[in-house]
Length: 320
Image 1 (cartoon, rainbow, N blue to C red):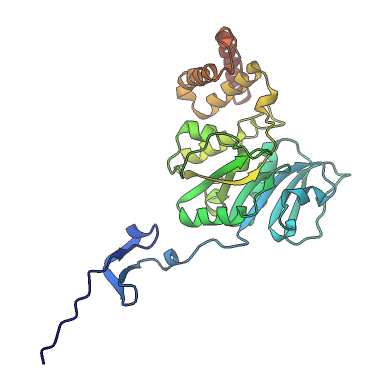
Image 2: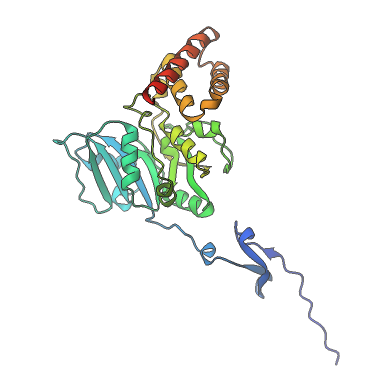
């Protein structure tokens, strides 16, 4: 009786998701049921998720609250106490906010200014990942899983920014069609604070804070998030965008409440703060886009330039 040799077709190679670069090609395990090879990874933690439910803390800025009722509409799918929340409440000594829920922590602050509130949040946060939030946004039911999955998929990112829609369901702005892993300055300049999530460990390692010269209640009433992310970028920290919607927010913005002279005044200070050596180049680029989008008219260009230079001078004067 002639023995027949059993021929097994060459199995396809199954790479573990996103981990090909960290696997040992010489070490393979063959699965007889699926006829696949699995690479053995050098690092055990590559096979498990680093972040899990409960690791995300929502760091929320608000003012003059005496009750937690404002949180109820923010979580239409469950009770807010199911999530770790840190509330920075800028208030007076006679109107303190308290919490009866262990998952909801309160810091009552007697200072004013959004950037000061954000900094208190960063200082007191205990979650492995923090999400910056406002008191008038509404979270999507799967927002926590979206954020945790993104940080597990991109462990090298210090900050991952997500998408926001307005109360009518339209995107706030044009987001990339797929995750963007290398952000340029213009990408960073266009990020909203409520889109930002951060790995707390990396944040504390580099001691990055919001510049209190920028943001509501400050000398320059917007741009604080772009300054913050620009500082992270200068420290070689990885910032990426994952364009999945995590929340909705009313469409009214600080920018929309300002006239073009005020906007360019702040823009002059902002560009001086983050890209001083390329101030004129980026200012003219800003002018070009505003003209193209009809946000200003050609006869307003000189006034816009003049306002920007006033903002530049004011910032330099404050930071002598």
